[in-house]
Length: 61
Image (cartoon, rainbow, N blue to C red; front, side, top):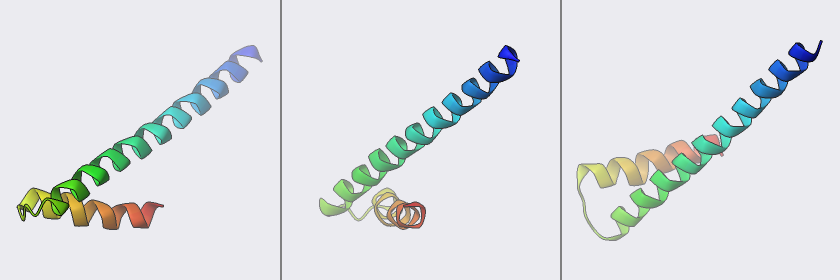
C-alpha cells in the first residue's frame, strides 16, 4: 500500500511541475514576442511569436 501512495504522489508532483514549467515557458515566449513586435521589427519570427503565441495563450488561459 505504501508503494501505491508513493507512486500517486510522484505522479501528482510530476504533473504539477510540468504544468508550471509549461506556464512559465509560454509566458516567457509570449513576453519575448510582444517585446519584438513593439520594437517594430516586422520579421517573420516577431509576427509568429507576437501574434501566434498570444492567440495560443488566450486560448489556454
